[in-house]
Image 1: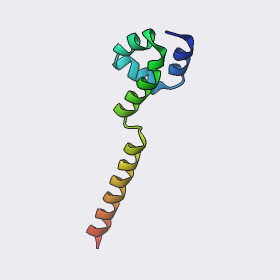
Image 2: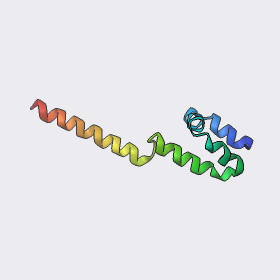
Image 3: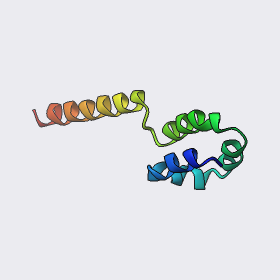
Image 4: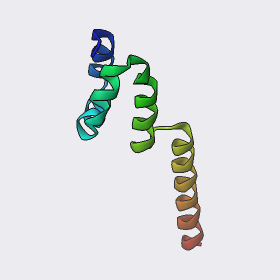
Length: 73
């Protein structure tokens, strides 16, 4: 694996954890460093770090608060 890719992976523990959990990515990243962006995309999908996931989480929180307020009245 190229040094640049290794350095990028070491900067974020979630990247390393995902790489350890999904070891097939070692092969993909070794063969083609351009797969790094795809790796990040898949990691964000799994750990729910995409923007849409954050929005969904916020909506769920607001919905929960609304239900709690309605129950107390």
